[in-house]
Length: 90
Length: 149
Image 1 (cartoon, one colour):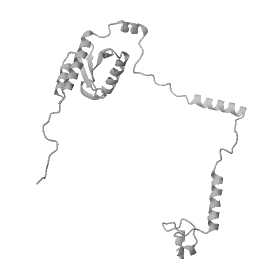
Image 2 (image 1 turned 90 degrees about the vertical axis):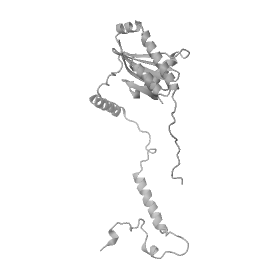
Image 3 (image 1 turned 135 degrees about the vertical axis):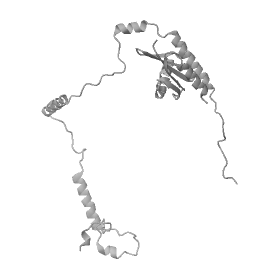
Image 4 (image 1 turned 60 degrees about the horizontal axis):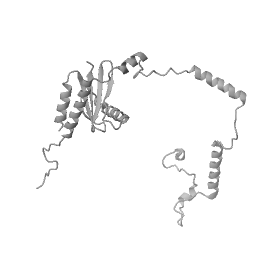
């Protein structure tokens, strides 16, 4: 029953420079994870995006970007779903 | 053969004299209580043992160190503590502060490339809509009857 979600995840992974992708629900349950994204990080990612949303509660959910020298991790929420994309810096 | 000295499951826990066990009184009491003087002496023995073993903290009275003894102890303890010095706590290695110049440069630089922002926004939108289409596909019955004649 998750064929659609799998398709979306595959599409994200096929984007150039993307090394990992993770989708989680509002309680931190990992719905899909691929590549360098670890299943266990779902809870952390959801918690981060939740706290970020509290900074400006009336605005739409912000994008959290975790950066190192070579990689970035983008986290964003849409409704009850939180998604994270790991990609190499161009 | 002196069986009385061996301790087994048949040894009596209470020192009850033999006469009372051999003639159980048919009158009223189901158990044979020890005679009054024995009970009294047993109670006294227990009381005496407790009194010698118990430390009555409340009765000790106010206790304070003399000035000399106090300073002597302070010296001894600080000497021992200094001798048993702990290693310095391990420095945290996860997130380290950047030097101010690098920090300023990083914060001034554009935060997120629009392409990346679009990437994540579209990805999450598509994932959310895909999840909203999650359905259970019914293939076979869950409850089946079997061995029904």
